[in-house]
Length: 161
Image (tube, rainbow, N blue to C red; front, side):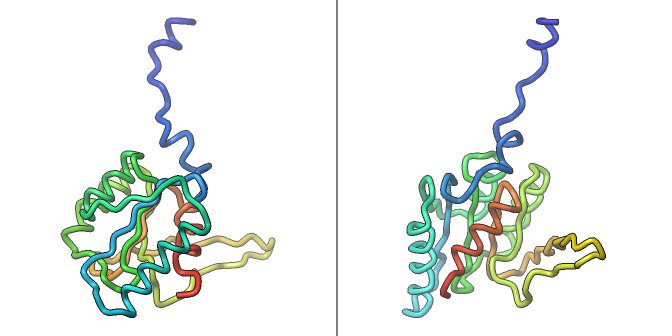
């Protein structure tokens, strides 16, 4: 019995704890892009201020969209967002990274959407949330190790914008 326990690979910390990570304990990565207009810069700075005032473990900015996504997929980062001022990435930044994060069990959605979250109420008052579809031509992105962390981060980032 002891040999069987030793032969089993340890459960990855990402898969065992990803659903319990909250924003106050998360490593948050953000990207500013190339927007330099005053309104855009103020939006980007306000978003980071919202994160800092809410609280997080730490923040990072790496400068590479696909690297950001791979770091979320690997568990080095908990969440990444970009596009607060519609300065999002290019399709080649999203393309391979999207496949990697989905295969790793992470979630990736547009940070800013034209519609509110779709909900369906059943007769027993259970609310089901529909997964948003990600568009490679999106001007914003948010990717996280769990849906709950993604939703919490989006709410904080977009607060007051």
